[in-house]
Length: 258
Image 1: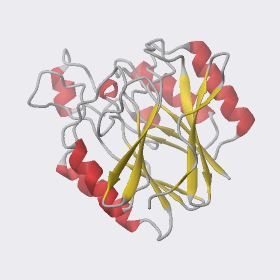
Image 2: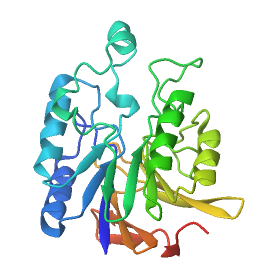
Image 3: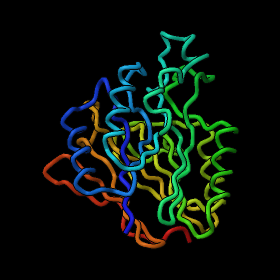
Image 4: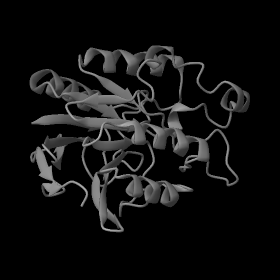
């Protein structure tokens, strides 16, 4: 069995120290094959937050891929940095950002869903640009035949029934393209509550899997991360919560795709 830990929205600067330590200890004890971090590592995209978050990720001792969340880009009150050098503080995590992974017949494909600016007031919401989709699709198409393919981005491509929303522009277009290309799951964060919903298109099923948060900014669920268990061509999602009930399945084991 291959296992990934899917974690999101740690928000260093507003992190929950107990939850952060709990996750690090679980990784040390259980040694997952990789950690997939779907964005918002920081709260305000400061150098100190990236340094702290980068040190935490490096301490896990397993392969890590990190997506960029909306909180990982400088805020509106720093418009010049946001528009012209939004990634200048990423040194501590640069090698992890949007890093494709291939482990034991599973391909992890990064997808950028953030934007420096948008034609709407709320720039925290998601957007899949044509360039981002094109780069992700190239990696999907290059995946070894027979691999399970998981796409990882910060914003849910469509809403997952949670209190928080993503309202990702062109998310539906991206999701349809991924389904047509045979992607098995799309992993995301942003909404701070776990979910797992099915999207079906032309007889193919893609799972949309969202992780909770390890920050103090919880919503409807306690601090949590997802464990994704892969058995051959089948996989299941289990929510691991820092509560009296540490495991909560949110999807049955399912045949991947068709």
